[in-house]
Amino acid sequence: MSSRISRHSILCGAAVALGALITFASMKAAEPTSVENSAGATTRPADYPIVNTLNKAMTAKNRPSWSDVTSAAVLKGVNSGHFDRHFHDCNEYWLICKGKAKVWIGGQSFYVRDGDIVCMKAGLEHDILELYEPIVGFHFEDATPPGGLTGHQHKTEQDAKGHAVPTLPLPADFPKE
Image (cartoon, rainbow, N blue to C red; front, side, top):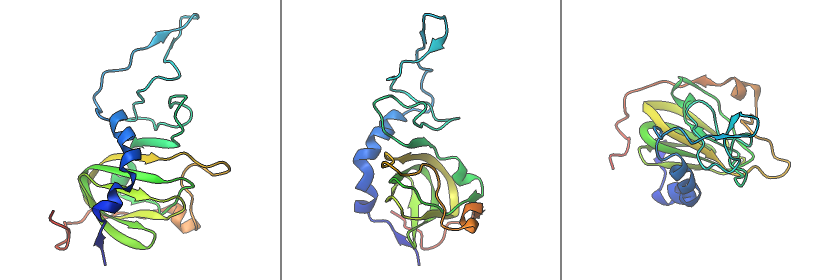
């Protein structure tokens, strides 16, 4: 049986996610200013505060030097019709700007929609079960603790292979608010 994530639970990562939302405030932002180094190559300063994630996730390789975010990017794979049940060694947040879906977190199903922040604690398996409208949003992963692994972790080979995610009509019990 599906339940609605409480507003309190959704906002558990709001303070952390606010920084990500500010960074990703506009997907059509002007291209960042470049700097020409002494060799004539165009580069960006290590502390440049803008990382465009339309084509490549923000990671340790391209984030500002002061940031310890493990990963952040546009949620693309969620609309592919295929997803994998997985967990991370860090907390993860899905910031849903638009769309509707049923997600699975730690053994419970939840409906999510426009404006929701899905908060997943490190080590907690999560998944996307059904799509009702394409999801537009971002994922954001906290710092990975020392000795932790980055990326999707799987408990079984079957989980790693992933599964089909059907696009279905909106269920009658989907919350109206």
